[in-house]
Image (tube, rainbow, N blue to C red; front, side, top):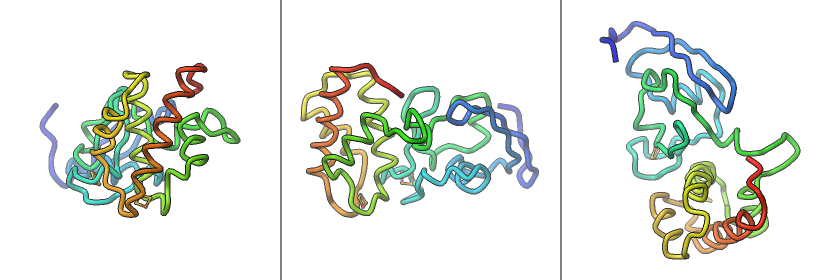
Length: 169
Ligand code: FES
Ligand code: FES
């Protein structure tokens, strides 16, 4: 990456949920803050802001990533996907989102976008996870409402359904 001057705003271009976006930001700006404040993608939540809680989890080039541990300038040229990009159509939920609704996999919903983005990426790589594997991947997320049992049930139901029918998102 070229040397960037602190205090100077730089142009950063990347793809956000399939749409080319461009923003001006200082080198110190977190990707999390760029998404929320500059691009109005407020579905990505700010929790601990140091990589622990998982609330800010997004996908960068198909891999799950903590938006609070990346600078916005590091997203240059990347394909960024956030929870706003999960639903296949404005009036349809993805299989994963539907499972969370059916199995009450959320309470206040603060942790939910991050968990959905993690599970979406994980289930793409591992379509037949064991319960233990799902517990392990979910261990990277803190739910302040402690609703882990329904979250796990929703994740298992989504995995089952995704094996039966093609992924729609
Ligand atoms: S806000 Fe990024 S991990 Fe907690
Ligand atoms: S549903 Fe409230 S933090 Fe998880």
